Length: 483
Image (cartoon, rainbow, N blue to C red):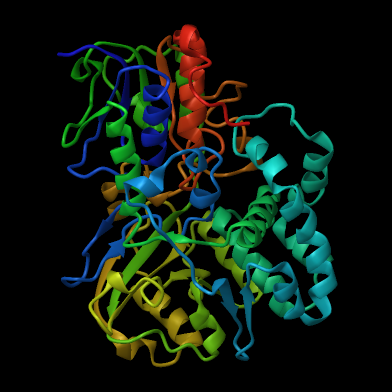
């Protein structure tokens, strides 16, 4: 087989990012993908009916648009177009009240009544300092370049989401709105890192909005792959790597897989102490997901919800907190927090003329096989009476089916491991260089490394820079450093 400087195993956004950074630094790189189609969790298929395009994994990409690495790349030249809904996020309540996250802090705050001032005071510093603090929390643990600005952010981010909501806000609707943002962490809201994730996602709505790629998440993967190939990189699909003997000769291998998968690779010599650390890596709850082909747009009680591509369904802080707590405790909630996405009203090429697509998921215990379809549809119907009448066809995935779609989603965990405070910057092991394994020339670049889940490519970028520093110091300055 042909010899390469580096071989990247897996073509998810992080694998593609790692390969691009290595290739544009002057190295020869091969990507090997087990599936017939590239993209990992960023893929789009006709899951229900012909002409209805569904994002199988990721769908809304504020971090993808704001990624310090992706922003350096000429992805628009390779077909990537971004679409925005008028409002980034909507959070409906049972009384018909609906809070929306607008790109403008002032417009958003003006709709929050008694909590307007508190919201401004909470979000304005994060938005103002975003460009300075983002590179530090989108990477491994290190002393921040702007310590005072990072400390200001950390004062709130290191509180629990429930504590932050209850101490900062007065009205049930705004508390529930923040809970919906924080629940993207797939953590009990009593955990401290849930607040940080809620703050980041809220701030991103004001910094860049919550855009999504025209035509589907596959567009991100296709653009990254096309750019990589334009640099001279190579991709092989439909080739599963189960052993190091399946790989061509190279000086470094970069694995876009999670710790437990790395342990299963035959012939990969890892010290027993490091293996034991990987075995202790903690995965979080899974998801149950439903995709729908719809005859019409979703008929929300409050038309404001129709202005957002992302809708958080779950009502109050207490209800959402109980839902997330149950998933961690191995229980199935009957009124779960549901993350609902509707892109087709703003991206009509997703469905035949006059028709629509939507998807939703809720968090469930890892490896759950319980069918949550009716429960999820009841939650949508709760805030959009008549929704069920618009369903033409549906496609469902329980946690095991989610895991089969993407082997990185262990037990249905789409974050590549629990985003606990102990696993934010030191995942998968406690190390200042978490991308480097204990075996020379073997690296991890998946979302099981910092900064964790999300389509942003920063795990892959930082892994690639580690490879270059370790193995190819003579080309260290040829790539662009993201700081």
